[in-house]
Length: 164
Image (tube, rainbow, N blue to C red; front, side, top):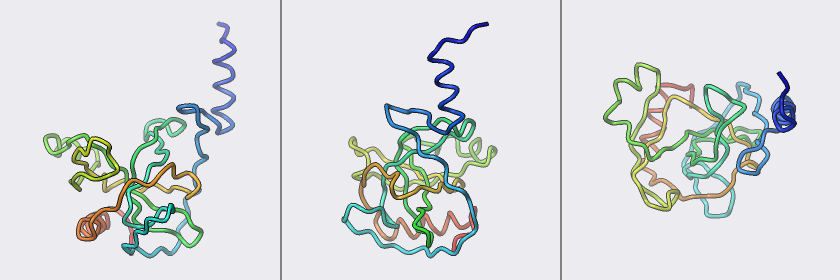
């Protein structure tokens, strides 16, 4: 069976880690390495992603990391090498299917609405999936969570991750 030229090109780009999404080159994954991090609430409206802020960045799909999409993530910490440790957000309500989600190892927490969503829909943060993101791969800042909400998220995320 002959593959189309676009299929061959897509396959080569995927192997090279250069798959396209929405016309943008997908960032290469950050190598996971245990490093000392400090979790602190430190949002600053300066264009840089800081702990406590919701920013937009590329999040790979769990079932196929070569694909993914731009989505809001909460910055919970910054490693000494500058890599951001983030948790993804969604506007989908998981309260009704919480038991099913937990059965699959997915845990969510309500964080309310904020400036990261143009329609100001209530959001939930996924607690069990820590995503590493390079600062250069952040598309834009959304808004900061209130400190008390950030502290609750970090406290709950510690049940799933070795955060200080």
